[in-house]
View 1 (cartoon, helix red, strand yellow):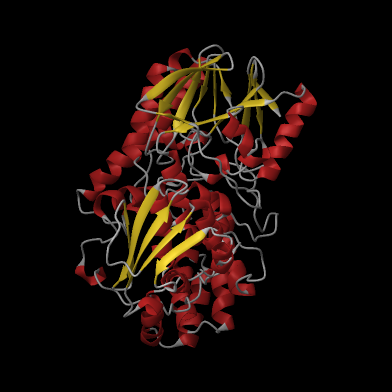
View 2 (tube, one colour; view 1 turned 180 degrees about the vertical axis):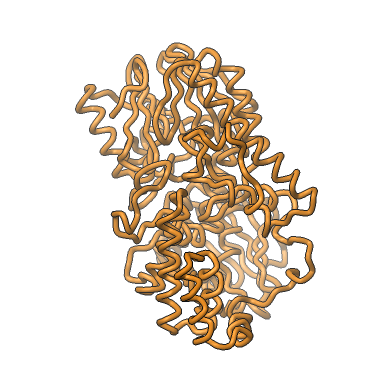
Length: 552
């Protein structure tokens, strides 16, 4: 626990993010809740032990990433929020951003995150040492309680438990929904995750929508001119504070120009014909930015951020028709190996390249052989050796963890016996807008199982006053709010809370019918048939070897 300014304390090192406690007249105002209830509760217990027990009056989510809201149930109970004893404040668009990003592609994101964060690696000089914006990510179930108040427009001024706050909305920066916070009494500027101790990600290696570098730069500039020139301390939801106005202004200026430069100069090169496959080897920061520790690429990198900017504007296609319709790696790999003279000749040349320190080239070439012959132990070992060397040399924590995780799986296989993370948790389902819930079911639909089938269901959710029409045609599940069809094959009435339980397999449809909680007319089998077409995703899918082909 550290004191940032009078009445402002942060607990750092318990999780990937920081949790901030701000002293109010009668209790604590908490900014961000870490990833899991266990770490949040431990932080609260530390603060209570050192500073005295005080109730939590307000929880603030700075933005819509799980390491900032997932621990909320370790601090407050849903009943406290429902009764008004605790309010939860978040930026506009928070729930959609939190759920959509973490659910629709959640399984793939979470699996890829095991590489970015090195979660399966041993701790140490040859394993995981850091995550750039924190030392480690907590493991365990996430929680989520919906905000009771959203900060709208450009921002708002509020007094919370006697403490004045000014909120500055910064949508589309590090998160689709995010906000900076100015505390005028303490002259303290909380820059959320928009300004931390490193270049951040415009594209995160776990996968997400590409972020807006130009908008990010402009929002930092707004914060600089609105608050920065009077701030005496600047802190964030990761890393450490900075004190003294001169340093605060300099950091804000150089972080502003960092993202602005990446945006402008990437497009400067793109407009000269530099492609997404070239720009990361061409773009360089000016010394005035490159030589600042807080602009170095420990989390984001100039390399993958430049490609992100170009992708945001021009997409993945480089304009060369030779790359327009490529073969899949597992289909082309064997042909590459054949053209290179076969596996033994390829390995012979790759070992010579490895001895010369050409690790990037070795990884590129031997990857072809691994995909052509996944059981070729010599290829896997050489590929792992080269990946480890890239990892040891990487300044970027995500790159290091990714290289070393790939090497680990090449040597030992995918750790399918390890615990998995689920995107559709109980809290996530409960927090989802109903339309988004049905969108998620559409993602889970096994297209092969649905092929040739058609059905329509009127779904009525009396507890929330919503009606939906679900239609399955052409192996696609459509949902339409506020519409009911006279031709629907089944009409189902069920409370949304019970629908959640049914989807989580906490209760059977038969049980709900017996209890009078599920009422149906028409063909009573259709809803069950639809749910029977929903697939569950394998968390531990292959990454560095050919993936098993989906039957869907």
